[in-house]
Amino acid sequence: MHKKIARWVQDKKSGIKRAVVTAYDYPFARLAAEAGVHGILVGDSLGMVVGGGGDTLGVTLEQMAYHTGMVVRGAGDCLVFADLPFGSYEKGPEQAWGAAVTLLRAGADVIKLEGGAEMASTVAFCSERGINVCAHIGLTPQRVRQWGSFQRQGTDVDSARRLQADAGALAEAGARFLVLEAVPDALAANITRDITIPTIGIGAGPDTDAQVLVMHDLLGLGTESPPFARRYIEGGRIMRDALAEYVREVGNSQFPPHRKR
Ligand code: KIV
Image (tube, rainbow, N blue to C red; front, side, top):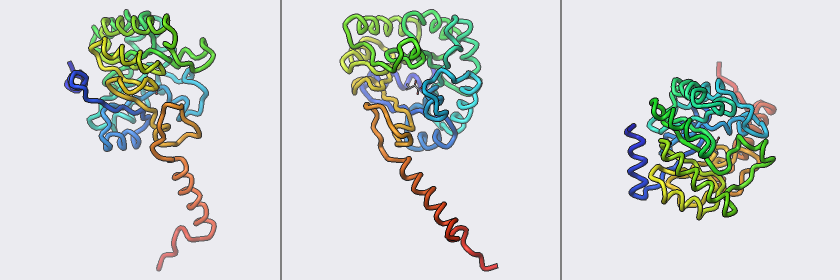
């Protein structure tokens, strides 16, 4: 097993929590690495937070590879996860393997794919052929057009049971990590206890082995963030103020300063 992944498994056993954040380019990856973040996810959320789209479905494999390359150059010792985008893997294991190879060649350590037990054969095929897979269940944004909105999952007994079974099947198939998105805290805690691979939660309470946040939510760069995300700074306001000051200084000839010669 990759030394960095073995460390994650060890930390799960010891109850040491790990922090993951999304990044989509070199400067933000470098900031995350310098801050001591453990994992960087090149999420297909880039279609929304960077691309301004309403969902993630427009993101292509080529775009993911391009952004993964930028992130890897800034990621230092962080483990780099990259999303297989919608349409690049659902047809079957061989399609998924081909897409995963593209992201591995761009420098990713782990590829992430959305879906439950129906993806277990794909996870097994890829992991048996040298690819570290992170599975993602709960709110899986690539299915938003089927659901009609970004809905919390696992809120009734049947769907909670289904997610618990999905988690077991994906871990059994060889997934190295499991993202749990927008599920009840107690369900995330139960799944985390039941499986030996590290869980990474987002909107899933405090009991998962790691947390992931979208960088632009954490830094307050967007106009709104999901209710579970904490805006650690109002980065958008700070940057807008700096830009407005630049505009002012150019307007009143304060910038650039006059040179002596
Ligand atoms: O694309 C993404 O950023 C994600 C996280 C929200 C887990 O999948």
